[in-house]
Length: 412
Ligand code: ASP
Ligand code: MG
Image (cartoon, rainbow, N blue to C red; front, side, top):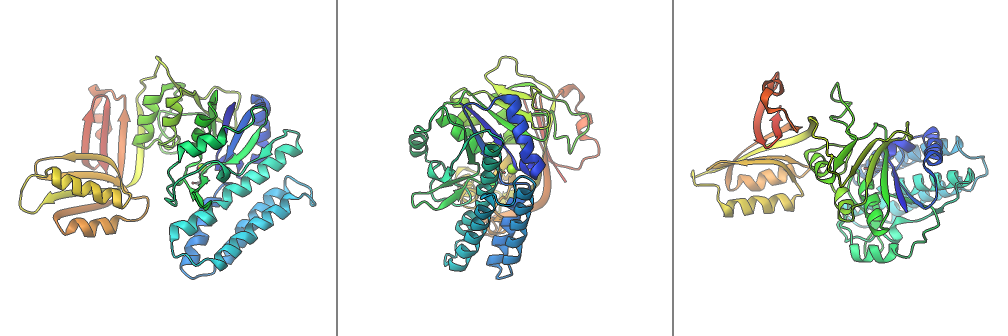
């Protein structure tokens, strides 16, 4: 079986959905599982609904906007009487009725119940459209088989259960299902974190022992740098799992960091291709002895630089470090880079859940601290170290680290 993942940009409008049909035509449609994200900016819009709901503001208006947007897309694909319109309406009615009944003060729980609907709707529309053009497929609710714990907005996959459920899949059917979502023991919806659809696809590929997984993007593949941020970028056509994992870790946004590990474990080849030019090879990530060691650039923005020093000039020792790491884990703040000296520790971190002020308050009780928000982490992989100067031009560098062929700098 093959797993294809279509991201939000590939299904952002009726033309995008039609294009999925074209991609499948060029690739063959037998034995595949399609994993789809919410359309375009739907996830952001549904996040807004939750924000308004908790802020006791008018969220219904925002729901109506999102609903209308999906109706408009469906208008471009189906005739007026198609049952999909009723299905879309029902899903939005359910969001409203869930919010009016809800008593839970747990933001993350409510978020998952609401925001997950983006994927449910996009997958319904895609499945119905493909059936209409005779790409026969079965719609599946990912929450029936991708099982997680109850860490809302950051679900951890229960591999044992998920593998058991997925083993019942039939091999000769094409399935259309959702990325990003699963469910906990009580069957409440749990999301896997923003941009988590690639990871879902990798979980399915792993459990299905898929022959390959492809994610369809609006870029030609994995590039030497993000073409939206850098000029003169080129395509990496062949890279190893290790290289791809490192690039994702450093912040290459085409690859979701958690995606590679399940694929690597079963040696499932992973392709990143353009949905605009599906016949092109794109990037292959896999077991390869021809990893391309091309200089590549990765910019991770919206980071926070933290400097922590002891108050009494004592060394930053294991007990301090373990306290600091415990706090970082508690607030789900991820380290992108760290460096220590005798009496201080510098961390470049990413604060996905807006907890930085809480961390600051706790650290402040024990240490001298300095926080610089809004910094970027610039990483050069496979760098040509003989010409270091070119990397330093016009940059205000707050921290730097060079290891092997990798240069990293925190800049302001
Ligand atoms: N729709 C979700 C998001 O926008 C998941 C994904 O696209 O991967 O984050
Ligand atoms: Mg996406």
